[in-house]
Image (cartoon, rainbow, N blue to C red; front, side, top):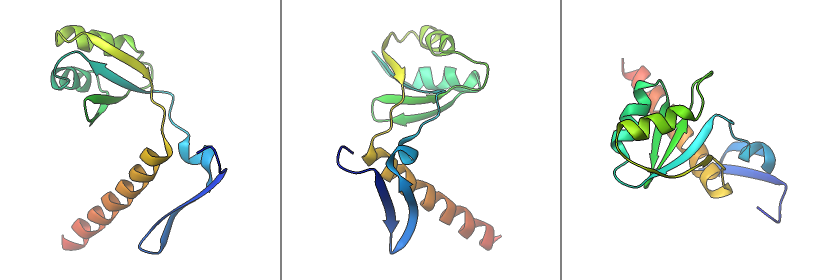
Length: 119
């Protein structure tokens, strides 16, 4: 990340992304990384009830807040689940995570296309 300003993400000879590193690492400002003291699943369920999109990333939750919803929703969900928040910060994408996410998007698109073709 410190030695380049342009990147190419490829899989099986196909270019999935080519462009500025800054563009690849750009994130939505409504996404937060959240860690709680105990089990994050109760917090995840409470956040989903608030219309948040939540992904589990190891022990952390990656939370996309819907428009008009602030970080107080995260704190409220943690309080409802009785799980103290240990960490909450805007999500920062690393080059490694961006690479893996780009590959995952491609795999999801391939799976959707295969499913559509089967029906």
